[in-house]
Image 1: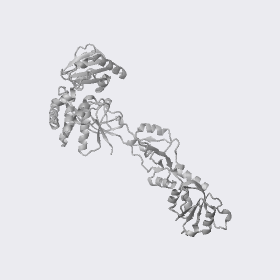
Image 2: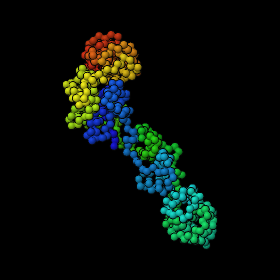
Image 3: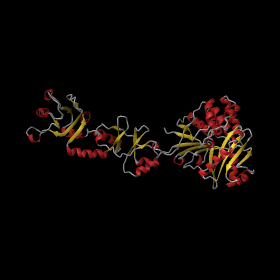
Image 4: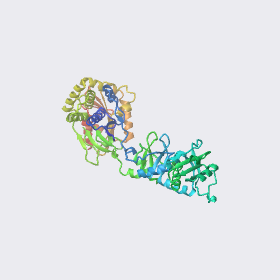
Length: 536
């Protein structure tokens, strides 16, 4: 069963992570057990704190959704041990309708590949030479459906020239060498002659073996088979282990994690029809051909808390988007077919997901309800953000009651941590930093929310230096950092760029790359719209 990834945006905040967890849980509760919550990049301190508080593990880390070999419906023929016979390999190729099959070692790792072409070439050479080398006795018994007449303990393999014994009157055509594999029927004289010479192997075809014929066999291996001599010769040739004729050197192989774009490039440089596929333990799991790349099965994703390509998981253009659940403006993500989309003007995506729980009649657990209430509080900054709606407040209160927690208790858990002594300011800024494109402007806006920003602002110069480096690295038109203060009910805005942008967008006079925005708590509803009016 292929997984469906529910994922939020890059630099995930609490709403992004929790809405992914909650929606995946909702779908799985309804019987869709292949929904998996995921996150991109690092989980920030606030989100980790609230996950720990309610006993949740972070969702899986999703690096990208590019199509990999694991997403393809490749061939899975049996992987044959290198010791099995040519006969078994040929029958397997015919049964599965594939021209190449993988050959493995005892531990399942790749030994080589054998093809119908390899077998045909071998048969031509073997029929011309009329001899075999080091064929296991077990292989001979298998292909001949034979019975070992004597123990021949010292023999493990058989080598020699294959001879069909003729009547004694044809003395010059009879076998003379010990290095012979003699085929005969009910011919006591021939049998005795073979044993006296001490041939490598004696195969008695379509005859009941009289014990008197095979007394004192010496070192000769004696086998009885129900086949006639002509068919037996053909089968002996087929008993050789495939290890002797499979392709080993310069073998091109792929792994389940390889991306199909890279695979196509490698295939274009080669003419092989099939390529072995290995798992993370180097074990063989199947065979890949160019045909399998024609219609790759895309990874399936549900996007929550964003609908902008710059914020989405890498490789999204190769994936199939099934749904979008969001509370932001419509942006630039496009789909190849109609999808379910729920976009509503509320303060948190988790509010929308919680509403879906009610509509579908699914009651969240107390821990999940508390987690969802925390996400709404986080995104609405304790209901002080202008994005907050009556629906957010009512839903938070309802979820808090189910979770057995108070809103003040959750608020303290969310915002009580001090960032003033955070050891890595660059990492702190990156945790909730988003890139935007408006008109011909490309810019970035980060946000840090704190109960009291006074101590944090003592590191103003350090923050501006980091913003300057980000601005230069990405060649942004403008870079901002919102230091949002819950107690003050406003935002200290630090920026790198023209002072005129601040004057025109917010009608305030900045000083030393900073300005206080009273009442501004939301990047989405207050800062970005002001810049859109300026540049749109």
